[in-house]
Structure formats: C-alpha cells, structure tokens
Length: 436
Length: 164
Image (tube, each protein chain N blue to C red):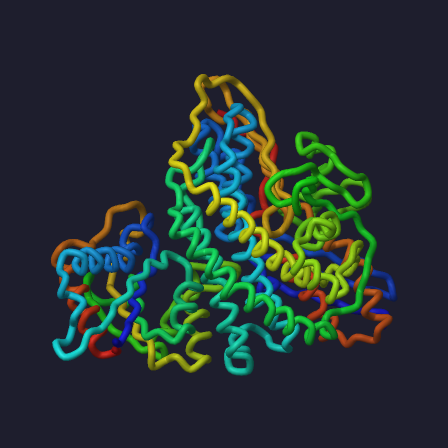
C-alpha cells in the first residue's frame, strides 16, 4: 500500500472531540496525528482573584469524570502554597475517595467505552442483547463506585465535602461498613468475572509495541496514587515541585491542547505508565491478575492500557479494604477542616494520579489568600504527543500486517480510546494575558 | 412487598432543569411527614425508594438493570403549557430525548435508556416529563411552586400504583 488517506472526524467513545488524520503518499507517511479541535477552556485565568477556598470548587469543574482528581490535586496545591496541614484521618479518607473515583472512571472506560472494540460491536447498545450479564455487572460496579464517592465526598460527581484542610462532613461508621461489605461481596466477585472475561478477549488486542518513557507517581509506601515523587522509566525519581522539568509543554498546529516531552519526543501517563512504575507495589490479587495477563514491566503495548485499568481496579479495591480496616479500628473522630492561622503569600504544587494519569496543579496566592497565578497540566495533554508518535509507527506496522483500510481505521480509533483521553480537560492555554 | 424506585434527574444550578430533583425532595418530605403515605393501596403495601440522580445516567441505568421498577422524573420541553405533566414509555421517550445534555464520556440519559430498553426492561420503566419554562435554565430560581408540587406528587403516586 503506497497511498492511504484516513480521516476520522470526532472519534467516538472518548470524552470530547478529536479527529484522527493519516495521510500516506507514495509510501511516505506525510501526516499521522490526533487533532484536538475543542476550544480552550481558560480555567487558570478564571481562577485568578478568587479566594483559596474557591480554587477546588472551580477547578473540579474542568471535568465531570475526573472531578475528584482535580479537586484533590487542587486542595493539595492550596495546602502546599498556604502551609495548611491535614490530619492522618483526612489523608486516609481522601485516599478512599481517590480509589472510589479511580474505580468509577476505569469501569466506565473498560466496559462502556473500550469493551465494544473487543466484542466486535460499534457501541455498548448491541452488547445489551448479546452480553446482558456483562452489562448488568458493569452497571452494578459503576453504581457501587459512584456510591463510594457519594458517601465519602458528598456527591457522585463534583463532591463537595473536600476542602483545604480536611472535610466539611465525615462519613459515618455505618457508611464505611456498608462500603466494606459491598467491596468484599460484590466488587471483588465482579472483578474476578471481569478478569475471566478479559482472558478471553486477549486475542482481540493488537500485538503492537513501541518503546517510550512512562511517567507516574511513586512512593515507597504504596502504589502511587495520592502522593510520592514523579517516577520515570527513563530518568528515575524527580520531586513533584520540579514538574515543569518533566512536562516541558509545547504547542503544535493541529491541537488546541498543549503537548509535552521529557527524555524523548514524548512520554505516556495513565494506568499503564503507573503499572510500569509501580508493579512491585501491587496488592496480591491485582499482582496475580497482572501476572496471569502477562503484564510485567515494562509493558510497551499502548492497547494494554485498558488491561492495566482492570488490574488497577482490583488493586484499589484491595487497597480500599485495607484503609477501611484501619478506619474501623481507629473509628472516625469528629474533625473540622484546618484553617490557616494567618494568610501569607505562597506558591505550591499539588500532584495526584487521576484515572488518566499524573495531574499537576500549581497555585500562587497573595497574602489575602487570593489566587494570583495558576497552572494545571492534565494527563491527556501529556499523552497527546505519545499518541501521535504511536500512530507514526502503528500505520507502517498495520500496512506490514496487511490490514485493510477499514481495519486500520478501527485500530487507530482503538489506539486513541485505549488512552481513555479526556479531551475537554486537555484544552487549556497557560499564558493568557488580559489587557485591563 | 412490591417495590418501585422513583428517580429524579436534572441540575440544581440550572433553574427549571432542577424540577425532577425537587420533585423527589418534595415526595421525600411528604413521606417523612405522613407515615401512611407510602401505603398506596389498602390491601397491599408498595415500598417506594427515592433517588436523586442529578446528571448521572449510570445511576438510572444501574437501578433499572437491577430489575427494579422505576419512574424517572425529569424536566421536559414538550411544547405544552408550563407545569403540564406527561407520562411516557421508554419507546415513546427515547426518540424525543435530545442527546445533547448530561454527557459523561459520550453517555447521556437517552443512551442509557436505550441500553436498558435493549436489555428488555421497557415494561419496568415510566418517564414523567414536566413542562418547564425553557427561558429559565440558569441559577437557582425555578417554577416548582406549591400548586405544581402537589400536582407532580399526585401524578407520581398515580404512576406508582400503575407500575407496581
């Protein structure tokens, strides 16, 4: 095949709008990119002038899917900037909320967005007839993960109890016991069934590999989600305060989302990147599943990000049960959010792993606690250049495999979906100056 | 005992789009203050479970796919006088849903209802549309005043008796 033109306007089953464009002329790949075509969102500019207590409320609106991730990263940036301490109980409950949100998002992607690709369906709707038990199971798991966010955070989407310094309302011990019961007796069996299902789907996953740099949080204590250092498979550990040395944002003509690069032309973040950096920290059941599915680092097949999400869902379920046992031992102490005694100027970086990868928020406040400057670097931003680089190698690989144009188009869509991109989150410009 | 779930969907911050949620709150209040209100038929109790789903179509889907009979209460634009209430089957409602709002990763209420329809749950679901003031879709103010509140509660309870 010497000439090929593929244009997929608005890739489906992803959040937001992106186009796949491939142009092969006389055997030469002229263009192979994911165009991000959504308008910029200007959230960093929007937060300017608002009080430190408003930052998480506003920034969590960047996304309805990763609202917990933005909220958590935001309060951590605010606390770092204004030196607001948090209690051990707050950290414990925040982690439980982060794990609930991770389940919530991963289940959505695995079953509702990616699964149709592996089950030869154009969307999830036909699967309701062919695989009703899988759909029921997926809805059941989604509902439980939503309920966890609701019980800990106060809402399923955009939870409202998480504030700088703590929680405005704490869950009851009965709520925690209910979550434990559901995780043990419903989620774990459902995840085991999901694992059995995925074993049968493995042949549907393209056997494509490409070397790249994988970046995610890592800490000695646990699989990096809530805290740690930036970990790179190329460069080792880097403190989160030096995140700009890693992200190195740049602009490309075909995308309203900025791209990033570190040691190579691009790097990957997300479930596969976390797994490649944290495999040794997986909980026992998750590790068993990872090994059975052949997911030992460094896994270089981007299509396996969805499999990594399943492994992580098992891991966070096990981790949540550990946290719950801790809570049930110590009980829940009544605590008010910690308020700074005196406001002083300050800059701080917040970093957490959200479902799609590592997320950074950096804020500067003045001595009245008003936002002076904000910077948010979103996982999908960090993945877009890596997707472009994957596509540059995937197209010749598919031609060599003798794929039809139709199969190539579907495989390119599957590649983009495998990253679980959140395109609306990714479109933001940093250096906006308003002339007043 | 027969069981029916009543699910409000909408957005508290979007004026009249909050009406489905406010209907559930009003019903909750009525049930809480009148111990007998959940006993809808003398000969047989019907247990009512109330849900505020906000903009989460997956909650709606998981309730119905759990085999529960359900009534979904939502704000609607049916080109009718404000406050008009109409009851729809899934088959009637799905083509009328705009597929333009309430999107989480491309999933809106219409798609989730389509999914549960494909799973064969149509007979378990009714949808109550309440005609709203379509010029009032911003801020907390809404048209859910006392007269409409009573009318909506009465219509929901009527539907509960039929579907149970």
